[in-house]
Image 1 (spheres, chains in turn yellow, orange):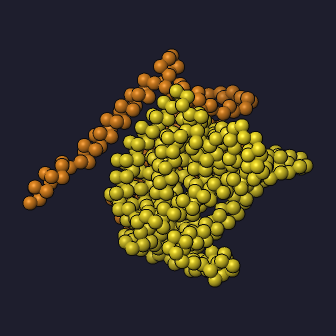
Image 2 (image 1 turned 180 degrees about the vertical axis):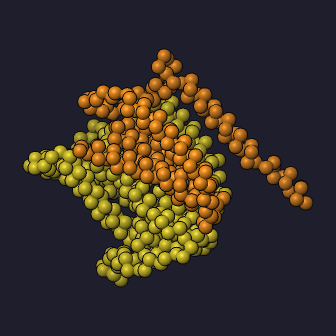
Length: 362
Length: 177
């Protein structure tokens, strides 16, 4: 059996065959689902820990200071120490809260992001489920997270939490529209919603180059709107420390707070991964048609490094936003979405359709 | 039992239990969350049927759209410690009877009908087919209902804006003075 880090399909096929050889197909599928679930959970935790550390380092870089530097070399174990601390923090019971909904809310947020992870293509052959409506599915499950935020704010029985939840609800519901429309622009160019086909179509030229002007506009709108959808600065009015203490998760402590915190970072990873897949060729190396030597060198880098590298670059961009722009007011936020992004987006889809019909793309 | 049947039983139980919670819960937000569970489990049934497009539509429109709207309006209007009054016994009995009658009608029709088992594998629904038939002006096209619904939606949106708008801000300032 030959494995390579360039193509995981033989590896996954080997696992499948060896499982099916020793047990009934139903049990094999169940065990495969379990394996994938555990792998995604571990990945989830690692990415969460790493991104919290990265955020603090990037923040320090933007503000010209060092950031965490005491625990381990360069402070690399800082978030692990924080996690251990969070695990030991008492879960403060809230007297007049709706207890069932209060404890349910973090799980809804976590499950919504967990479901999105399953449909992402991480590398060649490393793709848990390849739905033929991939892009649409990602939009559908990522829209579920807002329910958790709204429930958290309401069940806490706290006016700051409620205001935070209302703001965040209004924000996510509006910006979802822009995220969807900018993805539709690329679906028009790709002619498919299946993520594996979208990645395959970008072998010689990522969509951001092939779709030139409308694709670029769609990318800018996507990255801004998804920053807003993940409730991150400069769109973090839902948590706005100076006004609302901590917004919808004011009353949460210990591991429940950690769930919200983790979900925010994982959502950032997911939107960056979607942008990578749809605009920047997913795990595809940077290839130019006809440049044989150049392509060979680029293909030496394994696909998952390409995927994580591109995603990491976009995450850095999103963090950069957070630490350079001041927070928007709620009216500015809604004006930006409804008066600027939505009309631009609708016209952009039309331009993209025209370009595809006339064959003006590469 | 096959995996699909096990999943079907799980989803069916979730739908039945949470449907009952939805109508019997005395706390309004808990009822809304139960409704959300019912809608998500229904999307799960569509996934079992391999009709992924409808499942995703169910998740975006109902779970992500309508339930969020319901929860949003509850947040705006309701208090946490508000509880619905216990319904009168007479009303409970009559609504239970009405529900039972509906159940009997549905159950008898289902039991009378003989279902023919189909062993063919479920087909994946092609997105291109859906898109083309939705905007087709030919015999199998749905462009007329599609456009009619769009016009209806636009009219409803304009109506909502007109109702929500309270005159121009200039007039309000004058009346305040």
